[in-house]
Amino acid sequence: MEIKNVRVRKRELTCRNCDTEFFGYTGIQEDADADKLYECNDCGAIFSLPLGDVPALEERIEGKCCPDCDAPLEETLEEKTQAGVCPMCEDRDYYGSGESEEVQLETFRL
Image 1 (tube, one colour):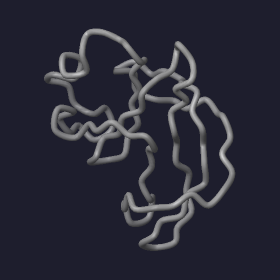
Image 2 (cartoon, rainbow, N blue to C red; image 1 turned 180 degrees about the horizontal axis):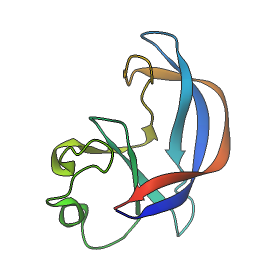
Image 3 (spheres, rainbow, N blue to C red; image 1 turned 90 degrees about the vertical axis):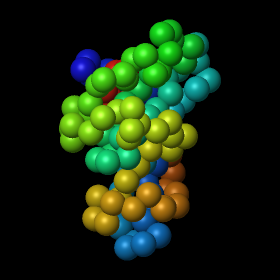
């Protein structure tokens, strides 16, 4: 699977379960070349797909597995407005605790 750098907003987050601080990412969707973010629910790997890209997502992931954990993407891939998983307890319940900044994030291109 191809690697693609996408523009995102990076923000420090705090896990509600264990108070660990980590970074989460939000897609920037103001541009014509914006990307949607997706996340593997098994391992937290982040994927991207340009807005308005065809063919449909279902066709792109059919029969494919996550490059990080080998889970079938048809079962584990989920669109996210904010991607991030606590590295300590793997919980997805967190809150923003810092300023956001625009960065380039390496993602798997769908």
